[in-house]
Structures are given as C-alpha cells and as structure tokens.
Image (cartoon, rainbow over all chains, first blue to last red; front, side, top):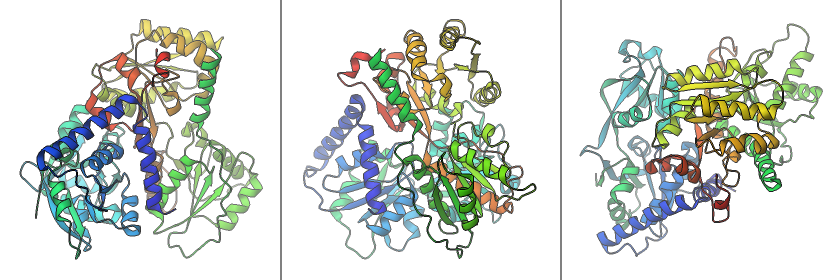
Length: 266
Length: 342
C-alpha cells in the first residue's frame, strides 16, 4: 500500500468517524445539499461530472479535513478530492500519484515549477494578507525577535518555512521556529509559554481573541505579506477550463473554508 | 448493570490503546552513513505508536536513520542492552511506561558513571514522575494540559465555563496545582477535591457531590488515573452522581466518550502524529545542545484531537453549531443508544 493509499484509507476512516453521529451527518449532508443546489442554480451544469480530475488540498485551518473534503466532493461531482491534514502526506501523494490540481497556500504553489497558478484567491479584494506577531502581555520587541521562539503554522516544511519567516520578519538572524499543523495549535504555544510569540494572519487574530482570555498583543510587521491560497494546475498540461470554472463557482461558505472570498484568474 | 459494566470494560480496554501488537519488525542492518546517526525507537507496535513514528520520520528521515525495535514488559534488560550495543543510537525514543521501566532497569544495571545517550520519552503517563530518576532523559508529557481542553470546551459551549472541578488522590497535589496555574491564565478556576481515605467508592461519590453541590462547578475534569476509573467505580460512583450533575465531563480517553456509556461529554487526546513531529523538534534541540539533556525540561503536548458527544452536550448547554466542524469526532446516540442517555 502506498502512502497515498494509506492516506485515502485514513481519510475514509476519519470520514466514517465524522458520520458516527446522526446530527453531524445531517449537518454535512445539509451543507452538501446546499452546495449542490447553489451550483445547480448558478450554472445549470453542475450535474455534468468533470471526468477523472484529481484535486489535492492542503490548507491548514481549524475545519477538519474530512468535513472540507465532503463539501468539496459534493461541490465538484466526478472529481477526486483529497484534503490532507499533514504536509508530508500531501507532498508524498503529489510525488506518488500526481494530481491534476492542487489548492494550497500561494507560497507552496509558487515553490514548484510543476504548478502553473490558474486561480488566485482573494479576500477583501486583496490577493495577499498581512501577517502579524501575537504575544502575551506585551508586544514583541523587533530587536528581540531573533531571541524568541516563534510559533507558526507549517505551510512549506522546515526549510521553506525558515525562508518565509525570515522574509516576513525582515531578518537574517532567524529565531527558533516551532512549526505546528493547524492554526488552533498556536494558542497552546502561548498558553503554555512554549513560544514568545506566534506569527499568523492578521485576519485570524479576532477569532484567537474570541477563544482565549489571554492578554494578547499584536505587533504589526512591515511588508509581511503572504499570498492567499491559490489553485495550481500541472504546468504544460491543458488545464480543465470546466474545473477552473467550477472552482470559481464554489459557494461562498466553501470558499470561506478555503480562506478566500473569491477566486480570480491571475 | 451487567450490560453497563460490560460497556465500561470495553471502553477502558480501548482507552489503553494497546491493540494486538504486530509482529516484531526487524530493525534491519544499520546504515551508519546516515548523517545525523541513528534514532532508536523502542516501544510497542500499536497504532498510536506507529503514528508517533510517522511524525518522527516526517521530520527526521532526511538526516537520521530511524530504527524501530519492539519491546514489551517481557523484554529483558540483557536483550535491550544487546539492541543498544548493536544500534549505537545517537538518541533513544522510548514509547510508553513499560518501555521506560525497562530502560530504567537498563540504566541501573550499568556500571557507575556510565554515560547514556539522550532519551526522549513519549506516550508515558505522568512523565515527570516516571522519568525523574533517569539520566540524560527528557520527553513530552502524554497528558494534554487541562487548559487546552477547557479552552476548546468553552469555545463549543454557549454558556460560561469558569469553574472546573477535579477529583484526585493523594500524591497528585502537585500535578493538579500546576494544571490550575496554567488554567488560571485563561480565566479558569480549578476546584480540586482530594479523595478521602477509606472506602474508595464512597470517597468518589462524596467528592463528586462536594464539587457539584458545594463548589458549584461548571464542568468536571476527570484525570487519567486508572485507580479512579475502574469499571466498578464508574458504575457505582461516577455515573450515579454525574447523572444528576448536569455539567459537562471532560475526559482524556476517547472511549469514555460514548453514547452507550453516557459518561464523558468531551475528550481531548494527544494527536500522535503531531506528537512525533514535536518530538523531532526536541531531538533537533538536543542535537544543538551536543546531545546533553541538561536543563531541557519535559514539554507539554500541543496538538490535540477532540471528541464530543453531541447529544450529551446539547442536553447540558447550548452548542455553538458552527464550531462542530472543528471537532475530530462527533458522537451521538443512535435510535437504540438514545434510550440510555442521561
């Protein structure tokens, strides 16, 4: 069994767990029906399956991958959608059973020549978002940043994140990074004093404040911008215009789970 | 009652996480060309341990050779010594309490002033106690910090969660106090009740009633203390009192969140794959410290998996439905199970 097969099996197992209760299943089913209805109403062609298009998604968020996978699969009938929880599985699956499309953070899509960006996510009419440092009790002193341990959600792996964080912090003296798999893992780093600060999108700060009673302080960073999620297609291959169109027509609720308001062609 | 006891025994057996072990993998010939050396992983071959090793491999496989050897409570100190001699590990990873006990016996059997490679302990209950007498050893606690669970439970509930009750035995005072300090930073007050001496069953009932009736706690946190969670105590003490408590119960074992059992409302568990990743970071730190543990105190686990009994939770408090998408497993009674709800 390949790692990709294992991941599929794991995802199926997780999906079964998600459906273990009646109400959760109803929630997902209801959302899926809304998705299908929206597509039908919007395009009138949702019933036409897109043949054998394989889409891999790695977008760390607090929404559990099985939930996102079900919604995307319902919105894209005929496509094989796999939402990954772990970056390593995502990268291994890309190597072993390459997909037709990837949906991931813009830095990931840009990192490999094999992907041609066919859609760019936008939020609040911008294709990039500002990152900030969040700490407890006092703002982070830029002069001290290199001495801090910084928590960050892993978008690119060890080497890739070092480069990205150095650029965002505007430093060549990289602080020690603590990479985590999901945005919700950043809060324990602050609660347990395992990190001096966490680096995160500014737009996620309100939800962190809503969840936590800590005295969270925000340090804005100069020109710390990261591209919003993007859709990459295999470079050199004719991208399915039908799939691109369908991704653009995803319901707003599903786009929001992907971290964008809208997709636009670059 | 018999049926209930049966469910509980199954639940507790599942909670231990020790499925049928797979055949012992042969560690195979050691490739000493691996730049960073060998990471020797010792422990049981169970699903949770395999996930931890996957997390280690994700991060370390490019620089280290990961060699796994299954050990059990039956493995002899001589056999362990043989493995360590052959593998010559740069660092050891010890998975679970029996493995730690075996390694302690190994260290004790060595001549005075022997030097040991660093060891990282994972998946061992109450790590600080079990590893304190080991040399050059650190690790990551298996218990998810209570505050992490409280914060997540609070974000799910549509009612305030401020005061949480916990019942514990003598000897756990320090552990509970530390958890209380961490929880206080997030605005929680931990109300602890130490069990009275004497009849355990009566003590649990009495302690729970004090938490509910005198301390007026908003929720109960149940420690992963096997002495408090055996089937008879669950059936005769915990369940009868909690049935009338009308507060959420947070546990640290997924099998205790079951519609049939109607005990735990919410469970927070370590994410084993992420635990392996976190341990890899610890090993990186050790490498930077010239493989000396020194002041590297054990860490706390960061990433968790969440299990919620939706039916029980809804019966106790309004639920923020939009937050359910952030829960890994949602449990609710089916038509038959619904008869057994609290």
